[in-house]
Length: 413
Image (cartoon, rainbow, N blue to C red):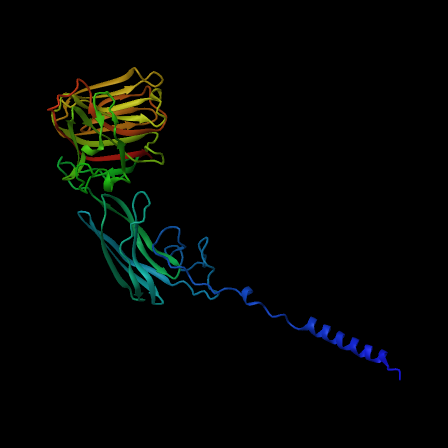
């Protein structure tokens, strides 16, 4: 008996078409891996300028913006609180500084951190200790913190962290931490001067035993070590340096018949030995009477090319008088300015080099002792405090100390 295969084939085709239609019109499930991940705000550890900041002195609120590389903000954005710095002040006692502020918030909220933010003259973060999980009321809440700061000028202001955002509250103020009067009887200058911006100071407040320098000063000082001194009769050796009673001490003496000196170099700028074009360099110092040893504290070209110039002040024998020299640019073997003073190294003195584009000036104890407008160097130079033999070779029994109370460096404003 012949079966009707055509009818069955038609029915199968209809069933297949129905399945295809249903498959195309049904929604496709989204794989779990493609779902957006839930994000958690990153923890902010300090009030660094790289964090997203809101200034409430300019506006009560601003749109939420995430810092580069941070997680995207939540889809629900809380409005910024209206923050006001009711009061702000700082009290200085030596190097101890206490900052106090009263802050109000509308509405009253609990913040992640609240306190006083601060920056030194170099822009480094030196915030006062913050209060964590601190509530600020609409009527105002007091905050106070104390920390020890190095002599210098600081900018400070009220601040609060809420979520990922630092809020800078109210106006900024300035506080100066003065230097203490050390062995020399004269305090280190702190702050800018007309035409000059202070960029480096050291009052030598942390003791270091002989042989340990630079130690805690390694981020501020480098120096010559382990090779013949400039005169060729001795050796530069950092192990003769120490810090005590607020002074940097060079113990000049001989070991195994070799006279030892030192040449500390303050680190400024972004090159290995520091340095800048133009500047003001101030140093407070005193030495024992030491025949055969001398200073050649100089500005030396970063290029290492003598013909770019050389500025020496103070220079001279530690058994003699203070001198100063400016070597001629282009023919540095000649001296285009020479200064002789009646001052000996055995008394406390403050020596200043002012190097401007149009003038070079030597100042000793506040009085100009030499100036010139000729052969002014124009390339970066580093300040090197070379202290070593200067002829004749010291007697092996000669030993004593050169003390530096403080140093200060300025850039041309």
